[in-house]
Image (cartoon, rainbow, N blue to C red; front, side):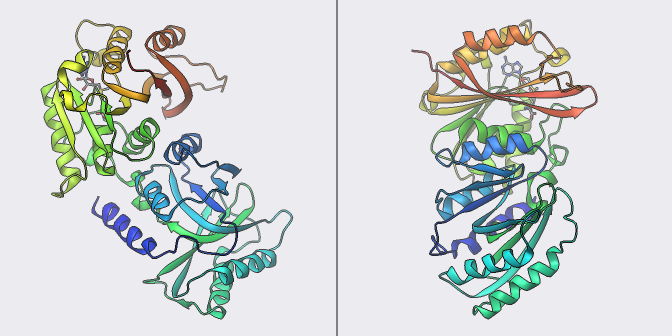
Length: 401
Ligand SMILES: C[S@@+](CC[C@H](N)C(=O)[O-])C[C@H]1O[C@@H](n2cnc3c(N)ncnc32)[C@H](O)[C@@H]1O
């Protein structure tokens, strides 16, 4: 926990020094995704940078010719679950038909074009396996020597600037550019577990999925809030507050409300939240009455992880509960709001593309969602274990007139 937060602060300070435009060339940006769910990570970066077009040059490497401000890149790195880092002004080769010498030539130009110099480190990252007959360490050393010839000094402990060298074993692409973010995966949500929180229940969502869902629903951080109408142990709410988002968490069970409050306080580590948040006891089917008026019309994202099977509360069916929750949310959401709904499904072992819900029928749920003013934008499956997967649905949801 402490490492996660303090290392991100370091990143911000260091990259605060990177000039807006680091070369004379047309800026080319490369995003490197974490490997746990590449499709979801792609959707997340598209949500966090909605005006930027990315094109995959390999499953985990997305290129863009858009110019994102350094602060925007930092925000994506700091709050995203699936984006590992960016290489700014990157150059690349494909070792199937290009040589390391060609990469070094391109890297020389990239370094020469930089409008800054100072203490530098070259960092390396291998993704999706090894590339035969290619050494990241030796290539990094050669890039370091080029940088020294161009008036940089090498400081591996406390560099002002970092060059990232990524070798993608899946595609044989090797890319190099000014590193924004970090190759150290331990600072990501992968190393934080819901079980570490003071209030844990088996229903608790994995932090990396919870964070990704909040980002899908809300996009870039702004003054709009995220609504978690059935917060349980606060899986979504903790992530939202840690990112500095405005957040409303509701649960009908007082123990869950107390537990979520405790989990948020624990995550904040005594620091004040960057934005206001509300954890409130109430019925998700009566959100306008449960949530203070001052929040109405200021909710741009809903994240919904409803109870199923034996966890289900009260006399309502699953569908009735989801339907009433969405209808009551529609009374208080803003224009252009989005919904992320998480539903347990039976694993699609033969990859048929069919959706088999653990409880109920997909057609029925699909109809219900359409009746509740939603339009599905994307859907993804996530493997949980041999007999359980999750369906993650992203939809637009229209406010009630
Ligand atoms: C699957 S759990 C949510 C788990 C949560 N995402 C987490 O990370 O801990 C569903 C929650 O919905 C709550 N719930 C069920 N019906 C509700 C209702 N009508 N209004 C508000 N909360 C409700 C339950 O108390 C339970 O905590």
